[in-house]
Structure formats: C-alpha cells, structure tokens
Length: 115
Length: 116
Image 1 (cartoon, rainbow over the protein chains, first blue to last red):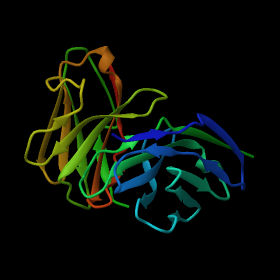
Image 2: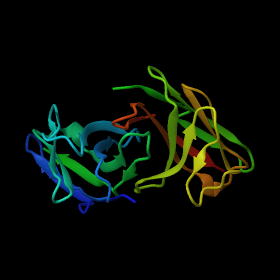
Image 3: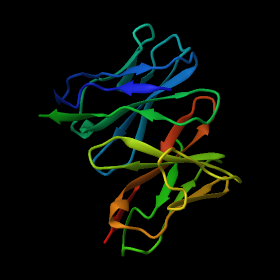
Image 4: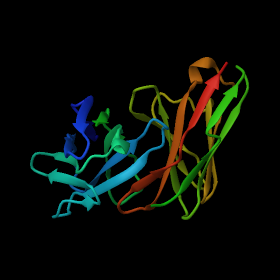
C-alpha cells in the first residue's frame, strides 16, 4: 500500500517569494509516479506537475518544480515567485505506474500568499 | 492538459430522491474513470474505479447500492446517488487520464450535493 504524508497543514508566503511544500511518501514498489495538485476554493483539482520514479531529473513546469529525493522518499513542491492566485490547497499524491491505478492523496497544505 | 467535464456543479435535492452526476472526458477516451468524495477541509477519498463496459470496483466501506456507477462509453461515466439522505451531502469529483503509463489524472470541476 502507498502512503503520502504532508506535515504542513498551513503555510504563509509573501508575494514574489519562493515557497516549499513538503511531501514524503512510502511504498514498496519500484515503479511509481508522484503528483501535485492545486485546489482553489472553487473546488476543482488542477494538475500541476508529475515525477516518475525513474526520472533522473527533477520535474519543472513553469514556476513549479518538484524536488525529488528518492533515497529520502520525498517529493517537495517548490513554487517560485509566488502570486496571490497561488493561494489554495495543495495536495501531493502518488500512484503505481503501468496501469490506470488509483491515486493516493496526502492531507494537503493550505498556502496563503500575502502582500 | 486534458479536459474533463462534470455536471451539475451544484445540486440540491430532497431526502429520498436520486441524483445523477455526469463525468465526461472531452478530448480523449478514458477506459478508466475515478470517483472521489471530499468532506470539508479534508482530502479526497476514492469511492470507486469506473471501468468502461464492466462493473465498477468499489472501495471498502462504499455502498454499491447507494452509489451506482455506470461507464457506458469511453467518454462518459455517471454516478447516481440513490435515495439520498442528508449524510450524503458532500463534494463529489471525478477524474480520468489519457496517459495510462504516467497515470496523470485530470479532474472535473466537482459537484456539490446538498440533501435537504
């Protein structure tokens, strides 16, 4: 079974600053994917970034980057140059690769961007 | 990214009635779709995996007869909440993904169900 742990229930960051959201995972499988989703107050889940377990380089998507440390089983999300619109709930998730398998989510981190 | 449409976005119904929620993949075919439930300030809880042309696979503790799932085509899955009660009030959200290998799932906008 897979498990995702997000230890930061809430985070504050000033506009234009960078912020790191922590995520650790646990699995006995070797082939898996790690994901980050953003959930604004409207409720929709927005896919941000993906990292495969065999990917040697950290994933980046615009202002989002995933700091993947396999030995530590961590997959932290780094948001650079924070914007007010980044205020939302952020969920880390994982699944096994190769099949359309279910996502296991963490409890989420609420990010608040301040002026 | 891929587009998943979910309808309705908000529904209010009387206790005892049934409510149908639709989830459509608009620009890709999805052999598998997923249905989640989310309580306020909590994470997503997987309810069931919807497989095109076959029966859904329900997670432990989810009542199959209460939450009917149909996946009749590669672009449409429906969740019907039967004989709804106030405790069924929640946020329901579906997902699907065109990338089987990576399993990147794209989500619908969700449905807020209020049962009076």
